[in-house]
Length: 376
Image 1 (cartoon, rainbow, N blue to C red):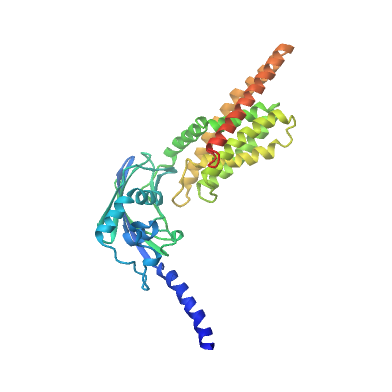
Image 2: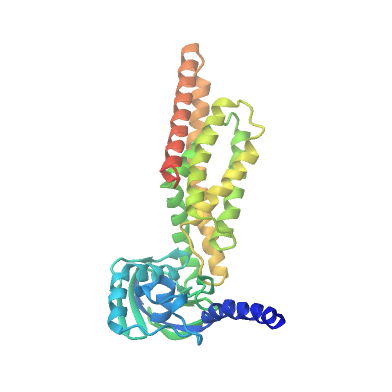
């Protein structure tokens, strides 16, 4: 009995340790990048066994098929090729999401139609095409087979590149997950990012309506200055923190809340004549809008003077359009309030303001429903 009591926990530990040890392994990834201007082609080579365990290819590879030595069970080449063909879109999506390219702070877009093929019995080759901005240094970040996937503990990625005349190679690992190829003109990039920030606010109707809701509730120039300052400070903070990766909130959370902020401020204009609570509310919602602004940008390389300059330029573009909207809208509202001296004109202005506020609130609520995964 004593021997059984001693052996039982030992056997249990061995049974538990065996599958845990089976996934402890190192793998390598090879990335070959070629491009000129706005087109970049990437060819990625990965181990089939690792990819198979991660995505469940061919229905054979998995924890149950791993031997005591950590090697995957042998699968015929024709089975692997057929499974890879059946799951080509999943493979391309995984590699395309984990191999991220960007120029400056603007992320490249992986085009559809990636080629996925079995090179031999142990390697899978994925050919991707990226559409990138035409100017700026190219940053490459690889999280293919990251430790968080739970399949491998260590991945070494060899990146060979020929980009805009810059040729070379480098090794990426857990300590260094990105490399920037080429140089960029710091001064020359600033106007482009100012324009990008201006366009992002100008064509982001939800952000514009949020500003209009704030202006409809403002009575004095001091109110406008206070809420504009609170909004600017708040969204500038989260814009920078999110862009450099220090803060990360999923878009399916941020976007519905941005829509809800529009409806909240608009309805608050109607239901609460007092504005003493407005500043903390605007600051809180400004933090949300900053996360939304940051969705346009990506910082995959190390933080540098060039990166900070681009972030500041992008934010300056946002502020310029914000000031333009305030400068055109609030004086017009003040003018209408001053010329509405008769009871009829005052009533008409009040009804118009209420109608505009209700319309803004309605748009916010509709967007909230459309953007909420559980409601849409």
